[in-house]
Amino acid sequence: MTGFDDENMDDVALEIAHIRSGSLEERRFAVKQLSKAGLSVIPMVVSALCSADSDDERWYLALVLAKVHDPVYLINIMQENRDPVVRRYLSAALGEMGYDAVDPLVTLFRANDPELRGYASLALCRIGIPAIPALKSLLNDKDSVVSSCSMLTLMRMGETGIDTAVKEGIDSPD
Image (cartoon, rainbow, N blue to C red; front, side):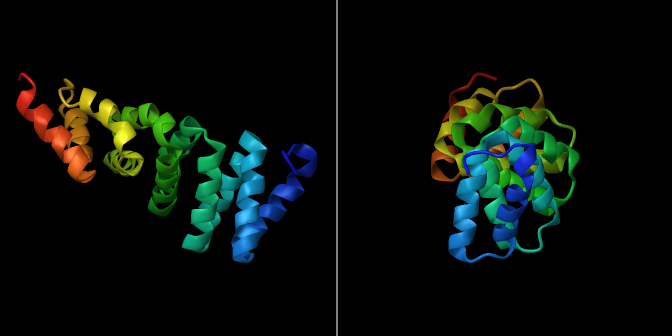
C-alpha cells in the first residue's frame, strides 16, 4: 500500500485500528503505511486523534501527521479545535516537522488565543536550533506580545535559546 484513495479508505481505517489496539510492531507499521499515503489520510488521522483514548494512540497518530508534513493544515486544526490534549499532540507533530513548520508557527504569535501561542512556542522549542533565526527576528517586533512570545520561547529552549535572547537583548538598539 503506497497510497490511499476513496476506494481504499477502509485500509486507512484498518491502519488506524492497528494504531489504536495493535502490537508495537503493528503500530509502527501502520505509521509507516499511513505516512506514505500522504495528504489524503490527514482528515481521518486527525479525527482519530480527536477521539483517541490513550496517549500512546495520540502519539502514534501525531507521528503520522508529522511525517505527512503539512504544517499549515495542522495549524488550522489547532485553531479550530480547542481541546488542550489534541492541541498538545498537534503541537508535538508540528515540532517533529522541523524547519518547515517554523514560519507557520511563528505567525501564531500574532493570534488572539494565548493558549494557541503557547502551543506554538512548545512546537518551536521542540524544533530547537532551526527555529532560532525566526525567533531572533521577532525580538524587536512592534507588537509587544509577539516580541514577548519570541523571548519566552528562546528562554524556554534552554542554553542555546537563552544565549541568543540575552545577546540580542543586550546588543539590540531600543
